[in-house]
Amino acid sequence: MNRRIFIQSLAATTYGVKALNAKPIAETKAKNIIFICLDGGMSHIDSFDPKDDEGVRGNTTKISTSGDFEIGHRLPKLAEVMNRSSVIRSTTSKTGAHQQAQYLNRTSYKQLGTITHPSLGSWISHLSDRGKTIPDFVLVSGASAHPGSGFLPKVKAPLPIVDPKSGLQNAKTDNKLNERMALLREVNKNINSPIANSYNQFYDNTVEFLKSKDLELFDISKEPQKNRERYGDTRLGQGLLLSKRLVQGDVRFIEVNNGGWDTHTENFDKLDNKLKELDDAVSSLVLNLEEEGLLDSTLVVIATEFGRTPNINVNDGRDHHPQAYSTVMIGAGVKGGYAYGKTDKTASKVISDPVTISDVNATIAHLAGLDVSMKHSSPSGRPLEIADKGDIIKDILA
Image 1 (cartoon, rainbow, N blue to C red):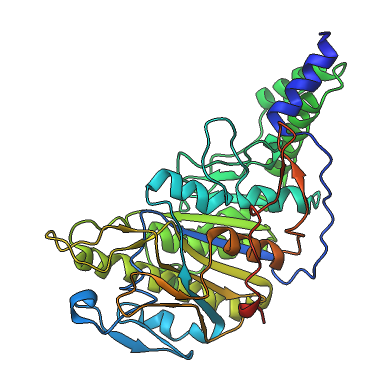
Image 2: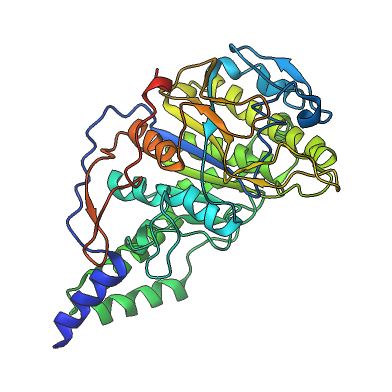
């Protein structure tokens, strides 16, 4: 095998270099997407699908909302914006282990040892391909095991922001970086391969971005203090404030990760804090986007890898429960004040309109204007879809 054939083969294996049609086919209702991942497994019973059964609900009670349904009492501010929201109460999965379920949540695919699938944000970035200086995919407080761009070109991997308060404050260009770039181009100029071209593009984009005024979007200190306080002085609150700024700068997909939802012990005490954090941050984001005239074009998603058991264990906690849980979509392209699907009286199982994670991700991609039925090729040549044959949840579409 000569060098050229070897490099082309390696590129196909590494990047899945097959013809991918990047043309959107649907109306793009969600120009921007904020995907909030609550890692650990949020209790649906204590948040968006509360029940009356005393043996199930613990100390969680129901409160009315601005929509046509009730939610848990720890979410009073979100209750006021449910008229902009569709709550899916019938999400269901067969995966109850954290790492595998979080991978499924982000990619729509089961985790395998032979392939890393692209996350939804990387797919949307790749198929949008808008050619802007600012990245199309930003990951805030990301998990270490995040699948990133998977087999897509590394230029489609998310820009990671570890701490939203710090943003990109240490990012800058200098002479050493410019020298490295010149050396890289010299090495690669005679290599006509997808790998070399991808890395050249990646570094070129990075340098242009670091020289641009877009860096200011990542500095939340430029927000009025009142607005910073409004979101809450928490990693999630400040992460969603940063997300709002990135939407203003037209970043296509922002994923915000938030851990601490694995409540095997002291479920109710922990949720007093965690749900308040969520309530303050997401309600402020929704209202702030609305004030800026951006909510109609921005889709906000609250997702988690599974729910919690109806039974309360001996440690006053709830254990993993993938059979039934809730997902929330707010803003662009979805009905407001709408609850879709239903669980039984103990929230143990879905009894109407079951929704898979693939269905959720297919709906997000559809609202982003992508053709979710289009076939793409994996590095091995296996045909696959963005959301693994997921169906669009048409009943929640506005």
